[in-house]
Length: 145
Length: 65
Image 1 (spheres, rainbow over the protein chains, first blue to last red):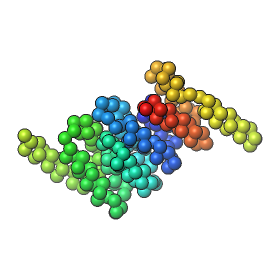
Image 2: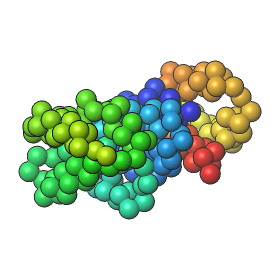
Image 3: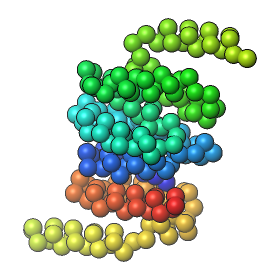
Image 4: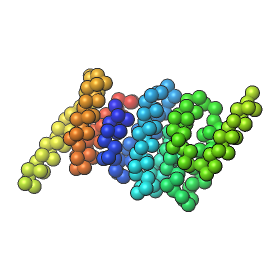
């Protein structure tokens, strides 16, 4: 119900709702691999909310998402930070976010990699040289045991 | 005019407070719940958005737990 409701009423999600909405999306609804479709829908709607609001409220979104880093067990929070990152040019926390996303790509949990692949298009805008990253991933696949 | 608007606002808040969304979701099919979401979309206004979102988020959290 939640992702469907949020998607339908996305126009009404304002600054005051970022905290309670992303709290549910990151800490609960995307916390376990077995949630499958629920995770996918929640990640999609979270990305939409960020894209609609990041131009005006990037700083507030960053504060909210960073507050869940230690509480969220899934990858959605890092994905959300990755989608937000292009709107934070020059921000002091950008380097830390870059590191987290790079770590995410190196992970080997199947569920995490599936979640990342589904929002790859949104995450790609985050990287300055995506071709080099793809090349590196293929090299790594070739050397995997 | 203002009194009428205020009274309808109070009525809405009352009905939101008494409506048990958690039970509604538990007792109804996916299609019916989607119809409710659709109905909310048609009726929601910037003034009523906050209590409605609070209700839905609270129900979602309770259902998850």
